[in-house]
Image 1 (cartoon, rainbow, N blue to C red):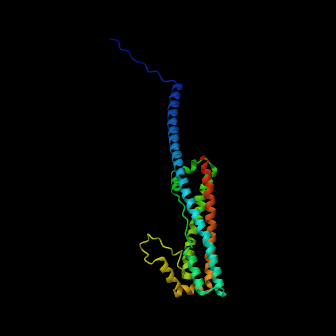
Image 2 (image 1 turned 180 degrees about the vertical axis):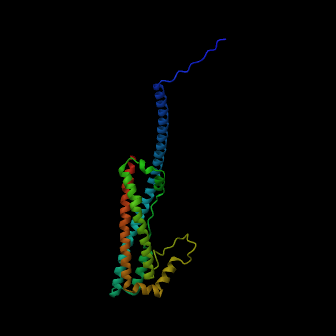
Image 3 (image 1 turned 135 degrees about the horizontal axis):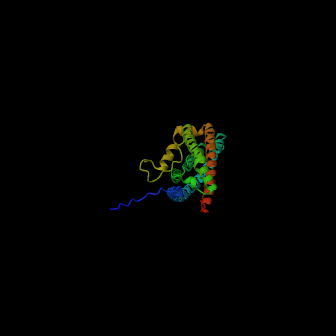
Length: 251
C-alpha cells in the first residue's frame, strides 16, 4: 500500500511579518480601547464632580453673603463701642447709659464666626483625577486659587479670628458673640432678659468696660474683624467668578 507524506513548506518572511503586524495591531487597539474607556470614565466623573461643585459653591455663596453682612454691621458696632467709651470717659454720657449701650451693641454683635468652604466635591475631583481633564484653563486656575491658595488663607484667618475673639472676651470680661439665645437650646436656662440684667449689675463686667483699656482691646479686635471681612469679600468675589465660568458649561 502506498503511503502519502504531507510536505511542510516553510513560511515566507512576509507571512511572519503579516502575523506580527496583525498581533501588534490587535494588542494596540485593545490598549487604546481600554485607555479610551478609562478616559471616558474619568471625564464622566469629572462632570459629576463639577456639577456637585456648583452646588457647593452656591452654598458657600449664601454663607458668604450672610457673613459679610454680619461683619460689616459688627465693625460699625465695635467702632460705636469705642466712641461710647471715649464719650463716657469725657463725661458726655452717664455710666448707666454707657453700660446699657455696650450691652445692646454686644447683644447683636455677630462676629468671630469663621468661614469653612464646602469642599467635598473638590476633594472627589482631585481623588478621581478629574482636575487634569478639565478643558477650560480659566476654570482650572480658579478652582486651584479658590480651594488651594485661598483655602489655606481662610484656614489661617479662621484660627486667628477665633483666637482674637477668645482673647477679647478674656481681656474685657465681655459676654462673647451676642447673648441672644436659641429657644431650642435645652442647656441654657437663664432667659435673655435676665442674663442682660445679670451682666449690667456685675462689678467685674462694669470694671472691664469702664477701663480705658477697653477701647484698646476693642480696637485690636476690630482690626482683626476688618481684615477678616476683607478675606470674606475676596472669597466672595472668587466664588462669583467661578460660578460665572461654570455657567458657560465649557469644562
